[in-house]
Image (tube, rainbow, N blue to C red; front, top):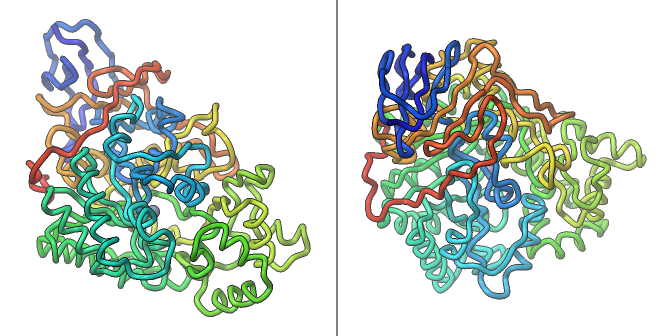
Amino acid sequence: MDDLLIRSGHVIDGSGGPGREADVAVLDGRIAAVEPRSARPARRVIDARGQVVAPGFIDIHTHSDFTLPLNPRAESKIRQGVTLEVVGNCGFSVAPVLPGRAQLQREYLASSAPWLEFRESTFADYVTAFPATSVNVILQVGHNTLRLMTAGLDNRPVTAGELGAMERMLEEALAAGAWGLSSGLFTAPGNFADAAEIHTLARVLRKYGAAYSTHMRDESDQVFEAVREAIAVAEATGVHVQIAHLKLSGVNNWGGAAKLLAEIEAARQRGVPVDCDAYPYDTATNPLRNLLPRWVVEGGVPAMLERLGRAEARARIRADLARDGLTNFGRIPSWDVVRVAIAPHLPEEAGRTLGEIARRRTLDPLDAVCDFLIADRGATRILIASMSEKDVREIIGTPWVLVGSDANALATSGVTGQGKPHPRSYGTHARLLGSFVRDLGLLSLPTAINKTTGASAAALGLGDRGVLRAGCWADVAIFDPARIAERATYDDPHQYSVGVSTVIVNGDVVLDGGDHTGTLPGRVLRRPAGPPLVDRRRLM
Ligand SMILES: [Zn+2]
């Protein structure tokens, strides 16, 4: 007897093919059958009439390693139908932390993971101690973390000895099950690394059949050069490269989406193993300090705070921003497009723009920014509306661009329910299937589902998830295509999406009639030993 029979739903199986009326049987955590009007007996029957039955969604780029230990039920993600999160992105991972380096890591990640505790840990210990969660998790090790552990925040090439230490830590992490390496070349200390350093580490990845994902060196005025740098890693080493949260930031770059996409598509057509992902919003989120010139953060957070208090440093920042625009984000119309998301030491300021804060204090905006960073001990996180909606729609509307929220699993109550974080934590996948597919018609439903299921699994080299097929793991999302929608807004982000009724993870029902059951059936998916079993190039 099967454990579950999902009856009479419209099955969209994740392959990109059209939907069909079918029943889905689940036994021992796996899909047992997908067949019309199944007569298989089951302990429980779920009536899916009028709903779509799809593979659980793969959120291919997230930072939930910063919140899953605090919110193992992964509420904001589960309620969108997400069943797998890829974490450890943008060069940031919680481990490894070498002896004596925990405080450095704590300061460094305060604006990304303000509520998490950091302690000395090998990657293997981290994997072992990772909590049981409602979603499945793929862990990556971060290049910024490896560099922080060896060269700190020094602006210089690593020595041969330091590079050797980074390679050894990477090997340890891969041996412990890390899926691959992520980089964050946009910010210190990753931006101090040259292409050769990344290629050296990518050769370690190739030995293990592991993957590379990158928050590129630039997403604004040099975004084309940055895309070429990412593609070159795949070309030189054969390692699969995932370009994270593809965007064109800064008013000077608006309108360039088609050209940027064409560059990546041409590489894919040459057979280069490269994929990219995006989130369906025109607003990014980042530590406030990352908007300032890169020299500001050299030497670490305490050095930055001391620097920001000095008039000559502010004058130099002002001149740099006037010449180059904001670091990582390019030119913005004004500081009114930058708003405080989370300020651990000034929580009452969450939701205000830096333009408003400056006017209230009758300060020049840059002085207000520097004062704010000092008062918040460098830990401020902001939202910045730096993209054009037209580019966002063009990128999201491209069938081969995958879907990554770039966001943490949050909950409306508890420690992760604080501040005004980016609504994408709660809304990415519901916005894709509601606003972008149903309301705007940018993509067909089977194509959109393929992006976030089958095509994402293929990019990851996962052969047994992302499709509803007998033998695959039973990760399933059941939703009403007429009702699925995001509710979270910038003003009121802590709101769950609606329209998803049932979510199944490894055969266990996690969301039941729209309610979280509290069960934690997710597991850390460890990269299989040796070369990948599945050809990482697109399977479907
Ligand atoms: Zn990133």
